[in-house]
Length: 118
Image 1 (cartoon, helix red, strand yellow):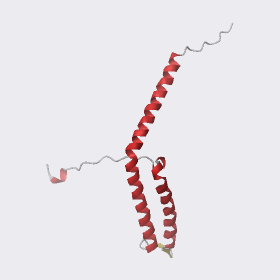
Image 2: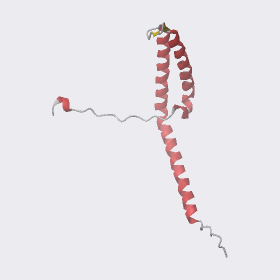
Image 3: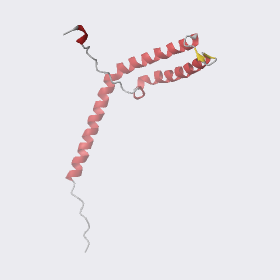
Image 4: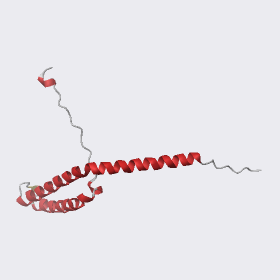
């Protein structure tokens, strides 16, 4: 096998739960929303004569703050992922059991007799 033929093992992508469903991430989500607003204002201020300068100090600082908040959000979601997955799995099992019980009850009930016309 030649060196060019080797394929790297691809890690499976981690599926994260929605941060809005996790209570501990709500303040971070709100902070990110505020930072995005500030970033749009800084971007408008960094645009002169129709040309945007990504090296404008206020824009760069706002972008760094936003990225930092997004990293902390991801860390918090990863930290809460196992507890969230466990809770979600329990809810799914309970919902499946309830659906199965309802189906069984519907099958056990005698069929409704149709009215016979004379």
